[in-house]
Image (cartoon, rainbow, N blue to C red):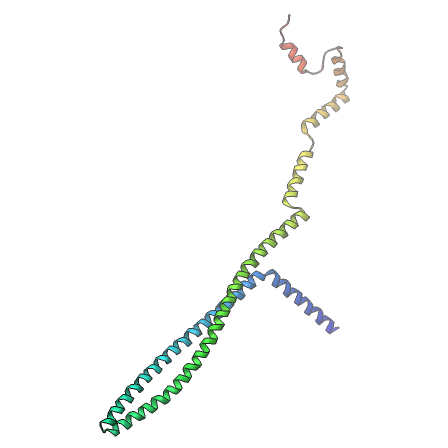
Length: 225
């Protein structure tokens, strides 16, 4: 039973995580791109530091090479002048500088290799982030379109504002006419008071009418002969 509960809890957590990722997918994409941008920036700083070291080492190598050439020329002149002691000292200095040059050139080679690898990684990451940003723009547009479609489906499948307006219009149009209703009430009252019978007799020419009509008003307005 414990294993069953554990499996159910694991499944519920997985579904909740999937729903959360789907709900906040755009936000997650934006955050991941932000993190990738930060990593790319750090890589660029490292690359800049390596290039700076490489240039410094290159300058040191060039300086040592220049000094070796200068001392070799001076040692040769000392030997020609019979100053072997000075030539020997110069030769020792040249040997030390040549040994230093070996180490510095090895360092320079390693730096060249690291710079090349890191530069390629930076270029790849930069292109990838550019693609991700374009993908994020497309994802936002798709999400916006999906939201619109979802709202339209909800409106067409349930009580949408348009349907509510149509229902209100039907209610207004279907309401009873108060004037017509008043006329009907007067007819009912007349029937109950027997006044309608008297009016019918008056219309037939038997006795006066119980109420004035338009015909009565017109007859009063016409000049009498």
